[in-house]
Image (cartoon, rainbow, N blue to C red; front, top):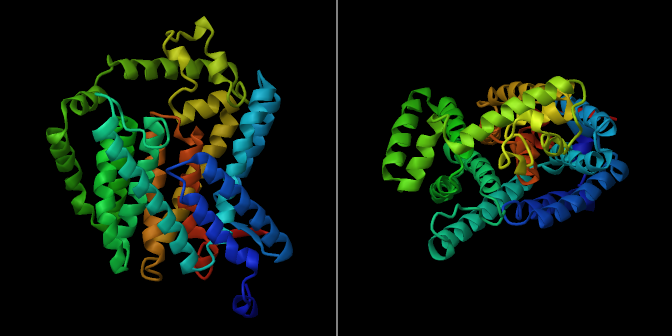
Length: 399
């Protein structure tokens, strides 16, 4: 971008875009429908900016393998056992446009602060509601689900919230960052009370990333904190935690069934899978060996086997390439610690969110959960926004 372009006053559309994105993120923990409405408006504003303001369509390098993933997913939909269902599900591929849109929307620090504040505010409202509901209205043994209606979705969102809050708290330079401390504690409490083990493991991965980037010697805190948390936890939480190590526990046994069924499905449909959103139809067949209870689920509880089974091994390779490229790109961003203190906290939070997503995704198909995917894609896009254009590894673009 030339010096004259930098001095030009942003258009009305460009000024509205970060506000609209922030409005959507304000509902990221509250209502997916409202979030998507604002996201749709933001998309329209972004398209106007690309056309009228002739802004470059720019994106980080990890967007390329996602484009390949999109193309292979559409081919898989055409060859699906039920093309109608698969093409309907493929509408979610449009969510990947959050990446270049975020790169465009965050053109300066005030825009970033709007969206960051919106995410923290949304998470805070969700935490307040969750704690109120759990201790006042919930039935004995009920798992926290917040506004999302499902405890696994809530757990995934809370892990992303903790990743962002920890990154800003540990590496931020503003005094106001200390208001995040009271957010992290109830977030961890609510995460524990979701009773979602994949979320617990994801949070541990996120915390490990933050500690490694801050002071690697502090990693010793992790096992100590885990033991203390276990000791003070109620009995149901203790039983749930101990079940992680038992192959005989019901949910672990189910996941083994899903893994075996997924491998069989991949072996029968290696190139393009059975089609997006059709695996649950296919694994009803007795030959896959699932119990009647397991057949009631709609996925294989694993990002890798689910993507390969419904879209094929080439699509899985593209998705893994996306993860690897994002990881490498974020590491490059983190090397700029001395160049820009405003960048580092968000790059650290993004790396923590990425590792948490990968680790928890071994036990849960969280990439297929729109609520989680939307917030995740936003978080990992922030370190590559237009506002960081003067640094290395700048977003790539298309004329």
